[in-house]
Amino acid sequence: MIKKNPHTWFVSIHIPQQKKTGHYARRSRTFASEAEAKQFAAARIAAGAEVSAGTLNPHAPKRIVGPSEIESWLAEETSRSASRAD
Image 1: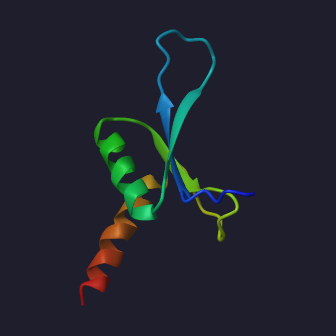
Image 2 (image 1 turned 60 degrees about the horizontal axis):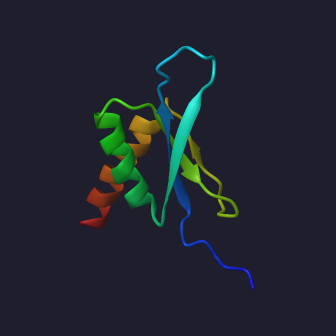
């Protein structure tokens, strides 16, 4: 029996190394909705973390949000919420 994963979004956070080892560590967490992922990402950015996000396979359409795009991705929620209120 195949169990379907209810989580479709992930947020990945860069974990700074105490020593300069040349390794780049990240920790990821999964979420059931884009809104939950955005809320978590916004909190981590406010704490000064480098964040990326995206959808998990096999979710389609696939979306990857790199660290340079996170701020605009978070802003999408505000504009979508505002248009739903009408």
